[in-house]
Length: 127
Length: 155
Image (tube, rainbow over all chains, first blue to last red; front, top):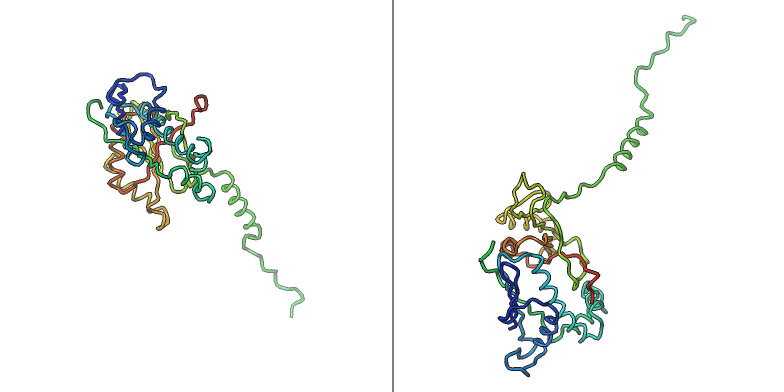
């Protein structure tokens, strides 16, 4: 479980550590998902890896979207890599799954890596 | 037998031969000048930016909920509100709203209703979480946050 928390004043905690700079967070998430048991403190395999995203009732929507974008971006990067396309191409394909070739890319990319983002119910400090 | 015919009968009807022309002219006039009524959004809508977006293909299945601070602060206060179609609704009305939106769709597509949350960037997670809880209760499981593509930061 990779924990990301935002409090009511939009301050960020990553795995229990306060963080201000967002660069590198995406790579950390990718590394966490693809750990496959190498680091015992990290995930066992991509199917069990969960990115937990917890906010407060006072967290602004802007900050929430900013972080969610990074988490989703990490997953899309992994999918795109596995399917052998670029991130933008993967998202393009995923937008219309009624086309068979798009569906093939989508399924190839997602095989074995479920999008395990858990958005927890917000805590109640701010309003 | 008189030599003179009786006076010719005077026609009293109004000539109606041009009536269809008039009717069609009016019909076309209104067809051309009528505009479809669009929803006036009465909450602040500064949509946050993001990069990892996916396009929405089947727009017919999407219902919009607008969340943000009301634009008319004097009238409605500063508290963030939820707008559906043309009216503000309470969180407790969301279940009813979802059912109404579902009723507009074909029966086979009802469970595919997607709720698009258009949330102002300054709105708080609290109200959004309340909305999400109600949507879950109403069995509207497909949800998306509407965002604007941020082109400068694209990687």
